[in-house]
Length: 222
Ligand code: FPP
Picture 1 (cartoon, rainbow, N blue to C red):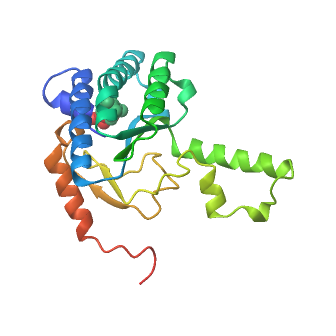
Picture 2 (cartoon, rainbow, N blue to C red):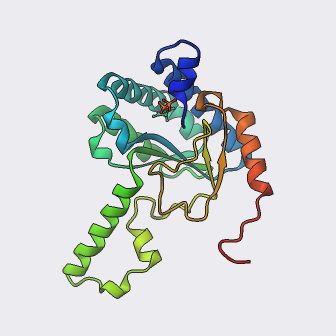
């Protein structure tokens, strides 16, 4: 969800206003995904690297997240949306973590769409943690190194049970992956949108999905 800061700068507003407008895009895109029949939506809301932003910006982002979760708790349930979270959640403020856990429990049985929030998330950290867990099982004699294959490895990622993304959308015209779902996006189709995230609304989502539909996916085959 790139470009909140630049969107605000262009308008002579503080960065926080960009994040606020970005949270509106989140609300609209979630509704639009439900309308389209999307089953999984993963939002990169806060990266492991985002902790190095100025403390005031980090605090403001956590408050926006808290507000979103607090306001949406009922709606998510009514919309039959299940909430999941990936990332180093133990680094989040206790209040945010408690909200996430409460809504996860409340929406656990919902089936229309799964909303995965990537919070304090880093793809490399996730892969390292999976490797550690497998190494520890190997040392304990629970598995042999030769048992490790793609499926076993994927089962130790935080996204175990969640299908790999079909479509990866990045806003602001950035052409980088920035530590997002490194393992899982192996065959994802990428759509790079020039607009800043606060400008990414229902129409922009529909355009990105249409672009995806025009792609011919080969998964390495002919
Ligand atoms: C990147 O833009 C955006 C973020 C680091 C935060 C994303 C958070 C939200 C959209 C709001 C809260 C989230 C939810 C799920 C309600 P940037 O700050 O890097 O922008 P820039 O590259 O233009 O500086």
